Length: 135
Image 1 (cartoon, one colour):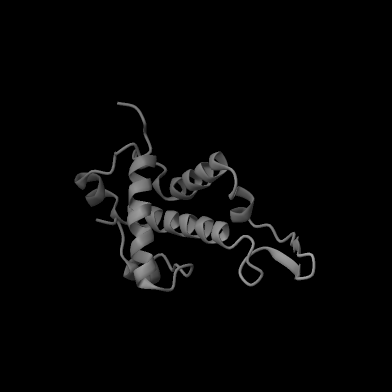
Image 2 (tube, rainbow, N blue to C red):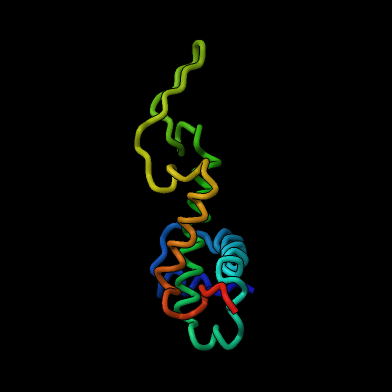
């Protein structure tokens, strides 16, 4: 079960990256799994009770990051949705734009993606103890 809902995403987190509840549910499930990994399994029922809002906001932040990385990766060469500046047909020529964003900068780098995810959840979970990797 996901750590947050579409209602929380829209009304409390003020998320606007995903506008479709069906797509949101897919990414919420993935973000919940990733958040469990990033928190070393420290999100227990007791932790959820104590840090409900923080966990939900961290999940929302992770949803946005995961969705944007996936979207940018899938549409990198799409002239309408991606980073294509111009496209010719004869002898096919594609010129990519220089409108890099944080998301497009990390598309091909797994370590940079991981750091971006950690940064996104740390903003909300710092000081909760949920990011502690020790025993």
